[in-house]
Length: 112
Length: 221
Image (cartoon, rainbow over all chains, first blue to last red; front, side):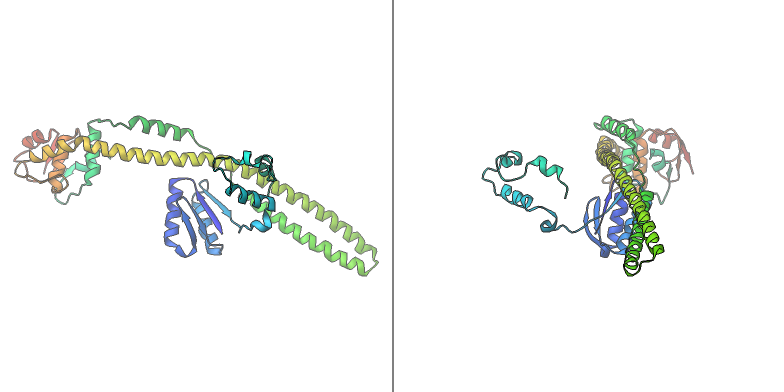
């Protein structure tokens, strides 16, 4: 899908108008951002917005996220284990010490 | 909008946005609000923030072009490799070597284009942090202005009501319920107006009495 993020009142208004008029090409709206369908019409709408507000419109293409393909098993297990922790006040950094789970630093430095 | 724009011509068919006109009356009297300082400060901060986001269209085009070029050259190498297996021709081998060199150049160019785009993306991210802050300031100013307007309107509404009940020959129930001409007259009486008002209504016997009641210069038609 195409993610459109706006950075000014004028751009946000234009996005709102586009979403209102072209409901069929809008997957979801979030205030100053929206997800458009990955069709030429979605791209057409997104490009029009950028043409109108070059500095205030950011366009990105999103991709589906498959954690089984893109993320190491240790990371998935760490997330599961941390959410099942006994004490809700334990920070992850502390939780990871002396465990099989990766440290926050390791997680931050390894790219997907 | 100045008060005179609202009540500079008082004639049949007049239409007055009530809230905005009350605000204009208060402004003509230089009434201040509790948020004036915040509005000034926020506007100053907004003016100080300007960072334009570098356009990356050229860089994106370059990435797309070098990627297409790379693809073509890869196919060429693959084709020649196939031919080379089928023949011992020296000229095919020379062509194959050329194609490989060309492919490696294309790879370098594509890598450079990708790197340039990534660097520009990082710069844009910083610029967008600034834009983000601007948008928040713009929203805050809008909210503060709403507060200011409602303070200004309430600061004068009682005086406008009093003026309405002092109108000759009329006694409207309320400012919102008053006919436009009565409302305009009351607004003009409370506010400070130095530019003459053009008056085309039969509420006053003559110009003098109109000027006295409105405390403003008047042309009468």
